[in-house]
Length: 176
Image (cartoon, rainbow, N blue to C red; front, top):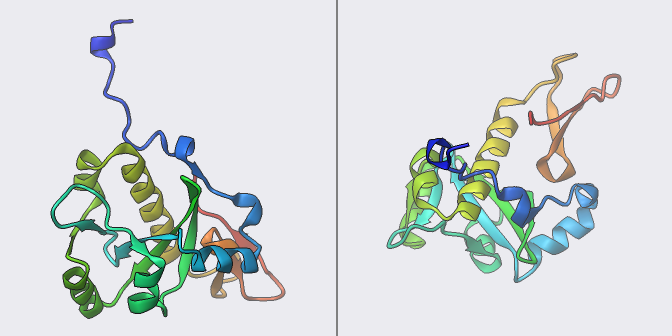
């Protein structure tokens, strides 16, 4: 096959090579909390539209560290993305437009959508951004049980949603 005719490599395809999604530990709330408090933890911040915070002066995601998360976003729930480079990676989704503008200034950051960022970020960061955005979208859109209509509650570090109706208790999963 002529390599010149092949499409360019998919920017988002290499994520499984760098990220361990830790599926077997997602139900261990104590372990998840320890990871979230770790000084090694990193937090990817998305706004309600799914745009990520980027460094203002370079093409890289603006990850928050544990101290920054505690200082500005201690009240925002986290979703465990997984472990990469022996560091826990979490997702934070912020819906408050006023706080978003304040954080953008305080973090000396700018926001960028996935379509633009995918062309500019390193493959590992682009993959993490795509994964986080997809998971955040599923969490936002999957609010009620498809079987009985009762509200859903996120469980398993944000990777499953369980029906709150005890007679149903159906589990819902993100599309893959």
